[in-house]
Image 1 (spheres, rainbow, N blue to C red):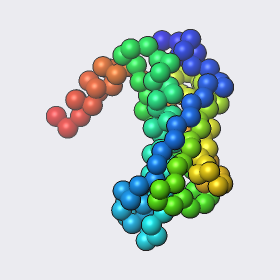
Image 2: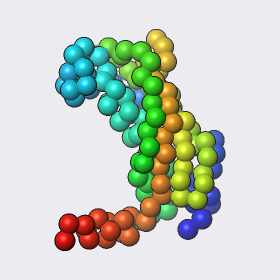
Image 3: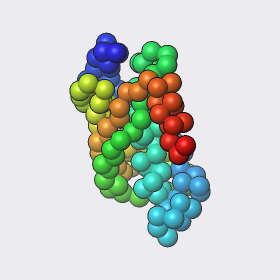
Image 4: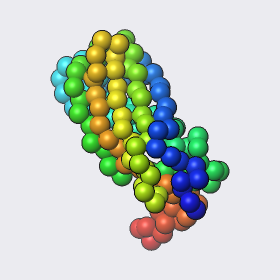
Length: 133
């Protein structure tokens, strides 16, 4: 499949997430302060990235994340809204590179790059089923 028929640079998506107790550093084991934990910041960014790509791919195709490079720049309190914006930077074969940013209304709280690969879902699942047998 020619991925460039469906995905091009400059495609973007934005999502807003509410920071809840379950998203805090102590809850996920990444710290002791009750602020947005880095694993959840990354999850918010990855969720937005996957949704962007899935909405443009034909049925039977999706993406899997293979690389995340994120800087967590500032804390976000419980109850704050984190606005995530992701944008396709490059499409190289089945590899898609996205730029990601997150803001909490006060400041930039995170930014980074994310790589995802376009997959044929059935083929991928067959490969997974064959493992461990």
